[in-house]
Length: 506
Image 1: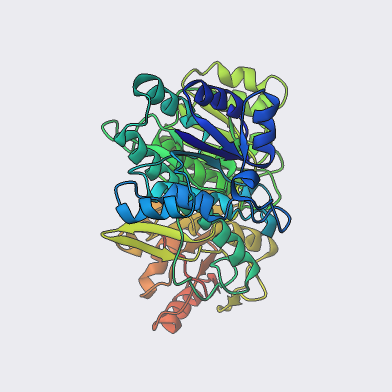
Image 2: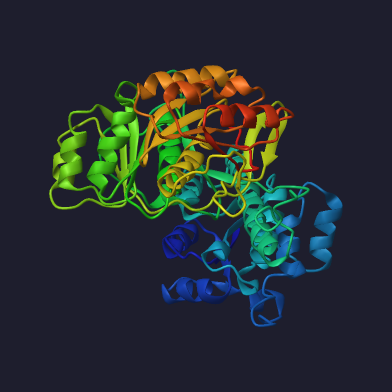
């Protein structure tokens, strides 16, 4: 039996080489792998001695030779293949142990591995005769087979081949994403008006979750191979394991709270929708005001804040049943106080990265879209009524517009003095969304802002604003009845701003 070992990650390579040698394998290797094996006192044939050609082109060409690939690819059951081996003096290779340059660690031309993937794919293609090992975690599986029967079973070779093709597919996808960034307009992040013709998507499991949306469902968190997000560095200080909905809602909360500007901000999320949002001069006040928006819905919710949690905030949150708290840090004994709540999942996390392409599964494929960017630009917004917002109302208009964009459509959000006081979400018509928002505001919206994620198709869409006592309305505009809606706003003395940007969310 002959084994070729050529690895970038040398974890355990000497031990596996020794075990292979003890099992009677002839060892072939190159470069640093060969040196490590030789320094351990094990006999090893350098690939250069096998091929008669040294490593050339700055080590770009080492194993790309018929003596290597012929030995890997030969179908031993094919008489023509056996004749070729004999004619050209090529000996079969039975095991290939290769892992690749870590391209994603520092993407560059020189970290695009060529010889490694070529050997991996060759061995995986010929898995009827050859085993291929692409990760140190597979060493024990291979050695267990060798110790048991002296060879690799068919099932092991097939499983290793499957993993090998997954590795090369993911590796190529990393390179594609990097090249997209180099080629203007090639990727979704650089072409806002166009989506790519094809998307290379390779994801790997990072965490098994407590369960899925419901306890009878299995859930897990995956990440794009070669990429990472805030979840990969987040620290869970306490509480039970995360479930699917804990992760889903926590991600929504974290993204929303970091979109609200520079002031201390707090968000409460329930079933992927905000049920409380506030900004203030300190984080304790922001949390208290966010919770006040809808204390009933906040029960069992997700809380996210964009400042370290203070002892005061920890005391304010302690009496409230909360599933998850996410913060950038914790001051003083705040963490100690929070960890007294055994069921509270306490996360410390870095800011979220911007979203890129959005995918949603449908039968046989995916719906794909660019991310919904919320534009806050007073110079592009249009005041369409006789009444004009005051400086304080402009600040609430901006906050309301940011929040309503993250609420499931149809959506209405009422904001007063930096605090969401009423949120109506997920309704089939805009009037019902407004009615729910007004009911939850319970008189607290007087003089505040009424935000709608889409235009009002009829003037009666303003009834909720009037009922709530709001002074300003912000909406995209664009209805064929805009003139009627503007006239109704003027009749009620409302200031109304058109943003020109709809934010449906499903």
